[in-house]
Image 1: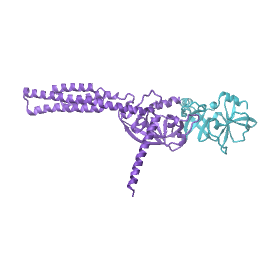
Image 2 (image 1 turned 180 degrees about the vertical axis):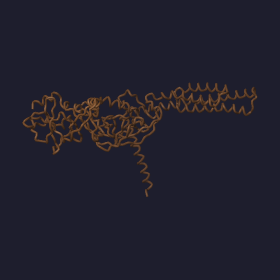
Image 3 (image 1 turned 120 degrees about the vertical axis):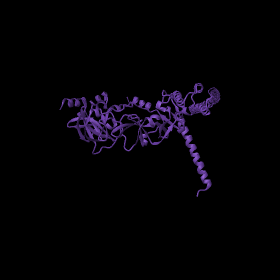
Length: 314
Length: 160
């Protein structure tokens, strides 16, 4: 039976190990990508200010919308009751439509809040205008409202598509990546761009006169794939050598002949586009799509990496 | 042979390659350039010769220069054994021997089966490789003997 103090020390020790690992990863990522830490701080500040400002604006718009809609709906219903002398059931039905409209509007506002679009105040004004038209006509059916809502939704989706201009088209929405480890650096390759993960079970053929990062040719299913020493290619200054130290997996990029050697393959994770600090492809590390601070990893831009390798090979 | 078949053969000729081993890899050279294959024999060193020249042998009264293929390919040295062979090759105007770990077989390859390799790196050695081919579940690396040495080096060999 463990002594209570002993278990406490184990907990403390594991906490210390966690801290040490975290610090190590921070240092490693900071050393490899010095801009990440600065970017992270800047990103956090931006996010805080962005989260605060639109929210206060949205809240005022929501309040205004709700108040004005109710007023419109009530006055219209009163006019109808006195002029047309409809039955109580009919007036209830009429009242039900504006309530549904109001519910729709609140839903839209909620969706837009989560999307946090920059041009939200304009969108809100437009929706308020449309609600007024709909409530005044009072002939709009629920089907028409749904159609309208869908149209509005499609209109609102367009600005979302441009939210991450540095990100590829497929990364505008949540996407899956495979995490793998290269000499302590965690890399992520989008599943979208992944060819195959091959467990290395035989020797790689060495081709003479190739640079150090070119390990050789690996035969898989009667075709040969070229194996890149991932560590030497992306961080040559670190002095790692996978050909010497060994590697257990090669990851095929798209369906190309190029594969990345790595020691360990982790799991797949789903990333939201805003989890990635997207990079411009104009910089010196064109193979790097961006960095994912949540997972302390670098996201590989597979197409650019293939282009780089092909360019070096031509 | 039909006209169609003849045309196909002309467009995609079948070439024969003599394969040899160096380190863990299998290389191939065009059979038309191979004169003969000799068991390892004593190689007489030549003073003042460049490092890639192992020395000379007497081949039926003719002096033939033997090239250190391992050194030329940037591979580490190894001891000779029963499998070691000297492949006598004939290039444009020269007859030289290349020392290899072992000679394996003669394979037939269609031109279309040969793939070019990525021309990465700036090393001269990379130019030795003419292409690669997947044959008998292994990778065959085809060597362009003409490019194994520069024109100056070929000329230098004439002096031995």
